Image (cartoon, one colour):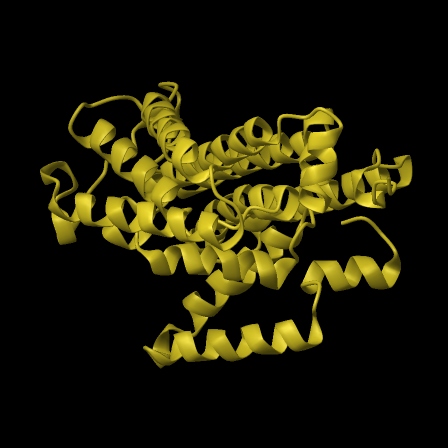
Length: 322
């Protein structure tokens, strides 16, 4: 029986050191953003999508499961959080908890259905489930259809932090992103994460070793969906609205694009990919519908020149773990 690949072996100390250094540098750069004159709304939006892309990368990059329906977690958590804040009058922290819990519940239900299939069939089932939810939300009264939920109050987090202040909101979003990022990092470097990597590389061998792979994949799917929902709940405070855009299949496509551009199966790749895509949308908005064409061209160029993604190629060139 062939030996496991290097990806399934414990992470060496040097790799952990490189990743910790990169994390400290990333945190320091993000922490000084409010003092640099950079538009904070852009960075906060990018951080929400970076966490979303990292959650998606946990599923495809480390479990080998391609989902075309991750937008349903983003949109569901956003709608529930927005409704909880505006209609129920819950505090921001409770709104986030309720929205994230809704995404976790959705992950359990859809995961039990989708995880029964593999490969392209799994991807198509997640896409179908996502589109089903899109049409449900289009007709459901509490989502307000195409108008969405507007004018969401930001409130005071824990009764102390005024989220209406841009700087305070920025650091809250940053703290949420870092917490989610560290949870993902801990997961992929845990025994659970090592099993996921072995399933990605050779599922039949993992089964022969006694692992119940369907259970591991289901847990990875639920965790990924929950963290995607957490990103959706945070995004509500940045955009102050919840709309059908976050549930549409094109959003799932953008999540895939962010992950591939940054580097599939890398720790920091999805973060860079999210910032690249959001930056293009922000600064190329004047081109109208041509933004999609430009994104397509850049994606093709990245695939041809950066086959491992931006971070993947950098890590491979310097022989570092990123």
